Length: 479
Image (cartoon, rainbow, N blue to C red; front, top):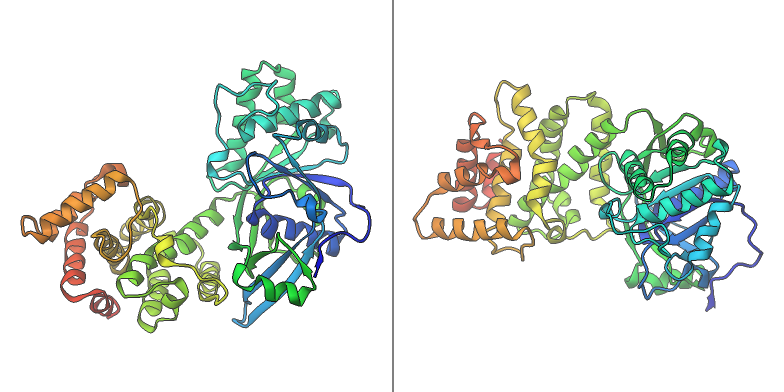
C-alpha cells in the first residue's frame, strides 16, 4: 500500500501559524481551514509549530503535511454519518526546540495573518525564568512573545503587520489571558512601550470556545480505513460529526476567514460567555450529572447510559426540567442544543467510558452542576432540583470506592474513605455524611448546609441509594 505524499508542489501561501500538532487541532481546526480553502477560496496554508520537544512522534513532514480526518456520528436527523477528508492545508511542521531559526523566520512572512494555539489548559502561564535569548523559551506565551517581537522588528512596527491570535485552550477568557501573558514577558524582557503598544493596537487576541470530540487514531479499524482509502496514513484521526467554533473577535474576521457562504459552524460573536454557559451547563454538566448515576446503575459507557430506558429518560428530564431552567436564558435555543448533545451522547462510533469521565469528579461537579442546582433553587422559591440532588448523592456514594477505581484530589479521597468507614460501622449516619461534605468550603466555596432544605434532601437521597439501590432511587426521582 502506498505511503501518503503530495503529487504536486506546495501552492498555498502561509497565512496561519499553529501552535500544537495534536489530534484535536488536526481533526478540528485544520479540517475547517481545509474546507474554507475549498468552499470560499481562503487560500491559506498552515505551518504547524510543535511547541514542546521530546516527542518520538515524527513530524507531519514525513507525509508532506497530509493527513486524513475520519468523521463519524449522527446528523441533525439522527441518521448515521461517515465520511473521510484528506486535509492538505498544512504545508510543514516545525519543532521549535530543534528548528528554532525556522521558527523565528516565520515572523518575517508578510502573508502571516493568524496564529492559533492549543497547548493544553496549563499552556497559558507565565514565569520569571524564560529569557528572550533562549532558543526557544520554555513556555508557549514566551515563545509567542519571541515570535511577535521578531515580527515587530522585521516590519518596523507596522500596524498592518499585526496578527489575529486565536487561543483554543480551555480556560475562561483565553484571549485576554494569553495577551496578559505576552505582555508579561514583554515587560520582563524590557522590550519597550512601543512594542507593548503595537501588541495592543495591531494584534487581536480573541477569546474562543471550541467543541468537538476528536478521539484520535482509530487503531481498531485503521487497517480497514486504509484499505478503503488506498494509502497508509499514520496521522489518520477520527472525530465526531458535530463541531462548533465560537470566536469573540473583530467583525473584520468574517471577511478575513471568508466565512460567508462556507456553511461551517463557525460563529463570530461579541460575547462568548453565553456559549460557554450553555456548553458547561448542558454538555459538561450533563456528563457530570450522568456519570455517577449510570455507573451505580451498572452501566459502563455514555452510549449505554443514554440508550438505557430508565437512565436515558432520567438524564433527559434532568437537562430539560432542571438544568435548562437554571441557565435562565432563552429556552428554545437551549433545547435545540440539548437535543444535539443527546445525539452526540448516542454516537455509536465513540466508546466514551464512564469511568474515564469520572476522573476528578468533585472539581467538575462544583464547576458544572452545583451552580445550576443553586440557581434553580433561587429561581423557584427555594424548591430544589431533585434530580441534580440525586446526582450529588450518587457521586458521594460512588466515592465509597467499590464500583470503579477513583482518581481525585488525595484529600477528597481520604475524606470519603474515613467518612464512609464511619457510616458502615454505625458511628455516623447519612445526615452527618451530608453535613460534612456540604460544609467543605474548599470544594464549594461556602458551607452549603445554609441552603434551605439541601442537607435534608441530600440525606434522603443518600439513604435511598444505599438502602434500595440506584435503580429504585431513579424510579422515585422520575415520579
